[in-house]
Image (cartoon, rainbow, N blue to C red; front, side, top):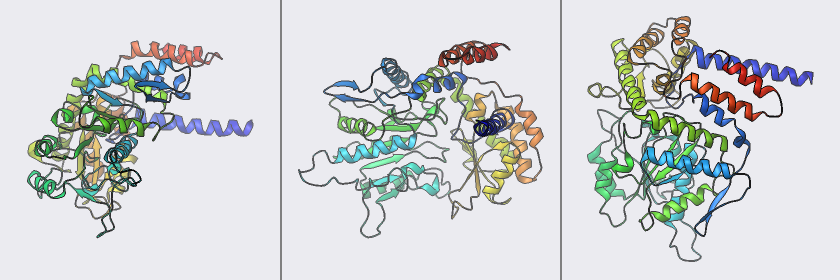
Amino acid sequence: MDSLYEKVQSLSQKIEANNIWRQRESFNLIPSESTPSLLVKMCEISDPSGRYAEHKTMKGKEVYFYQGIDFIEEIEDQAKEELSRFFNCSELELRTISGQMANEVVFKGMVRFLNRSRPKGQPMRKMKLVMNNDLNKGGHLSSQPMGALFNFIDESPETDKENVVSFPVQKGNPYKPDIERMGEMLEEHRPELMVFGKSMFIYPEPIKFVSDLVKNWEVRPVIMFDMAHVLGLYGAFQTPLEEGADLITGSTHKTFFGPQRGLVAGNFPKGSRLRKLWLSIKSRTFPGSTSNHHLGTLLGLLMAAYEMNEFKEEFQTQVRSNAKAFARALKDKGVSVEGDESDGFTETHQVLIRIDQYGNGMDIARRLEDNNIVTNYQALPDDETFLEPSGIRMGTQEMTRFGMTEKDFDVLSGYIADVVINNRSAKEEVKKFRQNFLKMHYCLPQKVAVPIAAHIVESIFPYSDFGAMFAENLTKNL
């Protein structure tokens, strides 16, 4: 027991130190992360986190294979209802536990869909050709052959490489698509699937252009939009399901308020051309890719959807306004900002800066981290290798939830410029500045949320006095 105690004590001290640094002393600007609200976190540790709720549609009825899950069935239905309202869609698959898995089940579903009429005895074929965003120009890893697309796409006998064709980009701005050339390439290649969406993501995708172009084809491609990075900006940034996309996928913890999960959404009423594709996606989710789909985070997703539907417009407006202000402020302080200045450099939460004149991106990102500014080094479109990145990728979404506005990002840009350009230490100043942003916004206020959280915690541990003690300590300072 002494050995166990020592290990537990050592680990708990490290956990506490990391929590304090990430939540109270540093600015998190990584564009693929966010801190969930207190109530979302309470959902994550509640009783469902240790349970199973496998279910499958059989003969038109949803059949659950475990008992004691009436509550979870209700939660999943409510989560679908809330998220259907957010996306204005009719179908949702919420059992994927990451954006990567969401993409994978779509690719699996595509293969099954394309083989629905194959002759008996013939092996299943893969997708013949897919178009997507080049990884080196911001494409999402999970949409690449080295990611979730692996094993679902044919190889070319001429090149021995997968039949994946990248979308063309403008010569003067590699972050924007070359629409004219894209139209030509579509006619030339006739892909079965088009995957839009990026991880280095500052401008809209040409969904409507492509949808209008292919709508009268006898066999048109399935249009998919991986919205992992911009899911929480749905509506303000783009509304791809209204623009002509068939499917959207994404992770629920970047710009969306949720825990780490994934989802697939679309509109596939009975009788529609792609209804069988949707049924294939559902079957490839379970039993194809999941068993336990992390029910605690499913509960947290519902809580996050409540918050997002309540504060959607206000949050989205502030995030994007902050990003433009942040980019402008960095530019004014001598930092090279990627994107079109006439467009305000960005239309999302992301801001991209070029720092190769001051050193390797990895080294600059470490320097910023040492000064309590947590960012993400990034290979820019003209970089030869990810090992020598010339960029830094940042996002405004998390710190917007902690109350930062345009003027605050102006101040923060000054610290970043000092660290990057002048190699000046600003650690203590940054730590002091962070003390102004410790309160979570776009959720229930603390005085209302904390008593609710205390009751939840007390109910989790009924076999000891811990729950009551924790609840008392949680509420004593209100």
